[in-house]
Image (cartoon, rainbow, N blue to C red; front, side, top):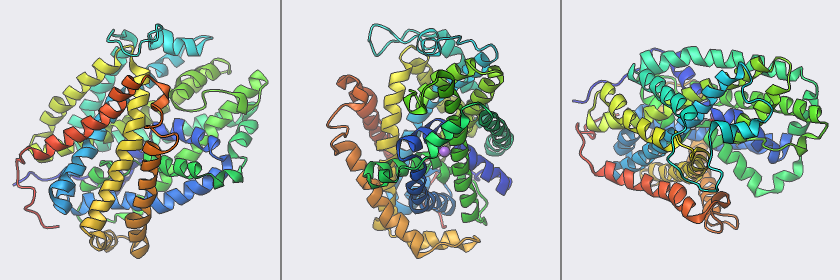
Length: 504
Ligand code: PHE
Ligand code: NA
């Protein structure tokens, strides 16, 4: 028989680990900029609608599948929907493989910048320092190079070692223990940062820029798409993470209430980050005597590694401010990375009957080497941006559509799953939940997917990010093709234990 599944020691361990996964780089560098560009204060309306109609319902779906069918994504989905379901599970694993490879690189940068903060090592030219001194991006316009960059390579190797050691220690002694320490630390550190930011001159202008509502934006469909995709990415739903984590919960568990805690915890952190980031940007604009709207690089890696360092350099006590910011980025990212890796390892352990140690140091080791070869070199930033975009907008959204349609339409498991969710939970779900996950979800997400690919500004019309087409073909479409190919190969290999001998 298959070996027993690991279990969280209690509700708190699970909740903190799930929050650790949800709260990531997206909360800190993605949400504030997305909200600002999509209606400011008015964005909160589509954001809340997306949270209630898709984010939380699909989060519950993940919980129900992982918990009822007690398995990693490929195992649990196989138990619902046979080989095709298993294929979707492996597709989710493959998404995690690609995300893990680049996410670790960003973490390594954040870790480096945490150390650099103590003497504001980037000096007066933060932009030049980031792409030049630090990443050593090629200046001759070439997009690919395998020249190793020691300043990135060393932190990247260290980050992988920390990650694999935590994972190797197990669900309770590694993953749960890390989150129980890291998440409270992250929240306290980040609160200090936000309070400090609020006392900077110009903070109020920053908040006005973020929260002044532009209600006309609500008439624009792309604002709604932005809200749904932010919620999706931010809650880490539909690509195996929440499914895997809930498979480690005791059989008799309240599922929905912790789910609500995780969802609202993640959104609260997101809004808190909006306040902190824009208060800081307000200070920066004030300092330069310009309006916040005239600033550049308000989201993504450039916000974190160019704008924030430049601001810290101008601020009294900028060392501490920088350390808090990059410390928060590192902790938020590390706890997310651990959850991504756990999806991969759980799938491998379930199917091939590997021990945790073998899976972590074997498979995890291979991923680490690939990640180091790709991102320990001067190619990092552009490859990362492209893989990230395709993994999220095609991979995750596609996986969500495939999973909801297969589980709810083809297998018609809606009633079984809503019954499972409600059996021991204080917050019960029924017809409304089934409507959201089986109808509204797939329609909205399917629409998003079509627009992303075939729309007037879609990926077919113009190559992503105006990069060279052959480049996007490799790091964008090539990655999607590799995800599909990987899932076909993994699905067709042999199970070490009989996956189908199982009663829910
Ligand atoms: N949800 C995380 C965030 O908001 C990101 C994440 C991505 C987490 C991929 C896990 C996996 O940043
Ligand atoms: Na998040």
